[in-house]
Amino acid sequence: MTFEPLKIGKYTIEKPIIQGGMGVGISWDQLAGTVSKEGGLGVVSAVGTGVYKNRKYLDSKEMVGKEHRPLEATNFYSFNALK
View 1 (cartoon, helix red, strand yellow):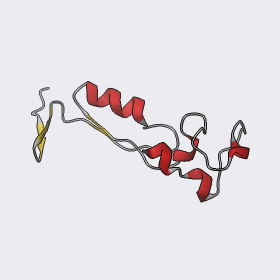
View 2: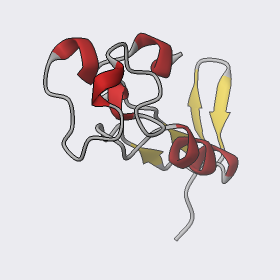
View 3: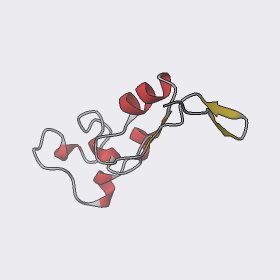
View 4: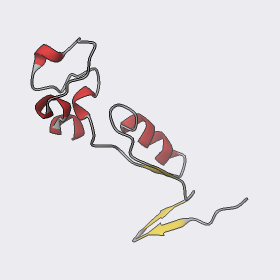
């Protein structure tokens, strides 16, 4: 089976495969970057960024090293991790 390249504006995606944004630790830079390097379209999720990179971007450091994921919005989402 052969797929035609997908053109979005001025960009062309060699392989029209889109990896959707899966939050809370699944589709971050490594997965999205690998999909993009292979010719698809990788998507970075903005959901649950507070748990990114072992929670090093949390505003509230008392959550670092805990087994459970932070549930309150101030720690579940981290703008710095998303940047």
